[in-house]
Length: 379
Image (cartoon, rainbow, N blue to C red; front, top):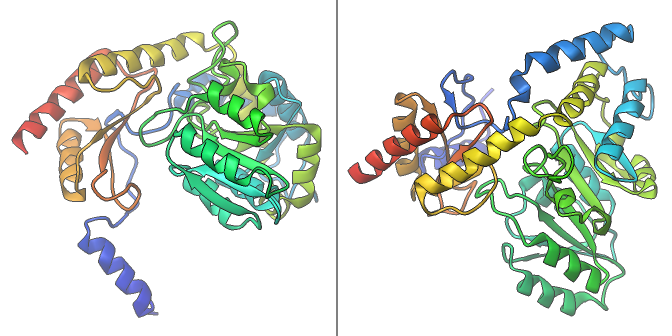
């Protein structure tokens, strides 16, 4: 059956703009593309400990058998949420099937008709999709611009019942962060509820006096000033799922009103066991976390124009055709570096996105960047 013409036309536009997305096989090249910052997804230790945990508990079920409210809330959920909340110094935690589900579930359910949401203009698509489903009014503020945010807070502070301020602790395209201490203080001054997505901070940032890896909010000791934190496991933890951290009452509310939790089959025991074991390994992964930090510093030193401390580095090469050419050149040289195309980023802001890992060597970083300088000179 043929695709409707309106849909076919949209595909043709993507092709014309050299922006058509396709599913590709996994790469065997030197990895500068995945979000597996600590190498947990390839960890044989985590794989074997997860398998042993299931054997020890005599858990042989391949599926959850239903939603968490029906039959899917198996014992590992209770144990893992308790571990996560203690690890993150949060009153409670609620696991969702993915970071996307967590963001959609939170923003579609929590802000109400007489509330307002103020969100960073570069917030992730899952945040914006959840906001679109909300009954609250929403306004974006300029990226990491706290003066612009404060103008909006002054404008709306007496008009709405609740104001939600939404940001990410580490943004996925440039790896930059807002001034979290100032943001928390501004939110407190205006009695706004601060919501922070920590997807790209978990496992990378944390409290240097503890195990590390808890996220940027906790690393700055701001967790008591944040209404909700969204922790995604598909990046620094190398597995699948997410959790919303917050109060006991917030968890109860989400269990009752978050549709992406209520109306979906729960994660199977194996997935939850992997999350638990990954968190247990994170608690003793200071060395891997330190390597990621050192690689970030080294990349900044070599490239000379990046000061962000995260494991995400972007180099803008305008134009889909140009950035795809640069990516293919590096791939031919053995380095998996992904191009980020418009419309994912604004036209003219296309870029190569490097993700640094604990298993990347400084020599790999240096060589890849030398090849990149070579192709930029040629272009």
